[in-house]
Length: 364
Image (cartoon, rainbow, N blue to C red):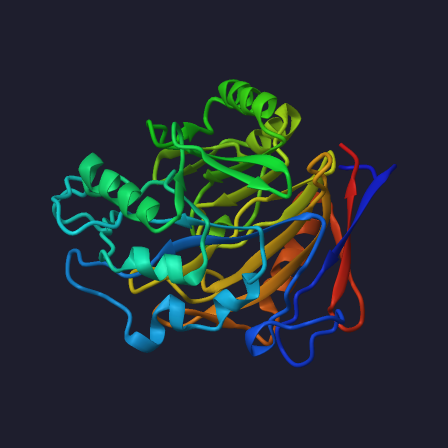
């Protein structure tokens, strides 16, 4: 049992999209807050799959397209907007991923128009460190990389590192996965992961780590400091990995892969979000509770030492087809509150208007 001797108290700001903006100051389109800030502001979402042309065309309608939604307005003004691109974007190709008749294997190929959608929606960098990036082989993934880069979006993972200069600070964004490749550093080799993060910390002021790991599905919301598996596949000890890379110099750690939300913690002054779940996953993913409950996370980092200053959460709920919209029931807030407490010993305390909360975590 964890003993609460000393606590780290961090103040969050809950980003309420509905009605008047409660922070004072200007609002963006549709009432979305604009965040001028001396801190470095990062917005992040989980898995993104904008429809597939394989095995048949399952694509969003014009009204369902990401860039037509109001959701992207909530990250307006962020210095960096990050997500996990759950599959390649290419015009053609052959997949050898799934055996004939397999029920637990999926291969995605997003249409080439997806790169434009992501650009119009405001993404700065996207992880390709996951189990779907190579669904149609290396050539298709290289086409994906080229299409993103030509639209000003930096793909990252493994040897590909997203680099930014924000408010005079050099920032590196690294991608890890339980399936290591040239496009993904491994979360399974924690010692090597810490060496890699330490090397980048020597060259950059801030290092952000994005990882794809952990078991999947509704039963995978709960965290454990243990080796996770899914369908017989090793998915890593994500708690050990995340804390180790913070020890090595990571300033923010963002997880995805379980397709559900997982808890938040502040470890040694740095925020770890263990899974942001599914963000926009069109047509092929489960969207019933809890899989269809998601959020946009925004964090403010100190430009001096990368420590966590504050954050906001915009709760979302997916439609039956996997399109996100704002959730006026704030279900994601309740999930994150419960999981952070049960799994990490962190107390999320909200004010009466759900505009602010504090998180109290045991000092580890």
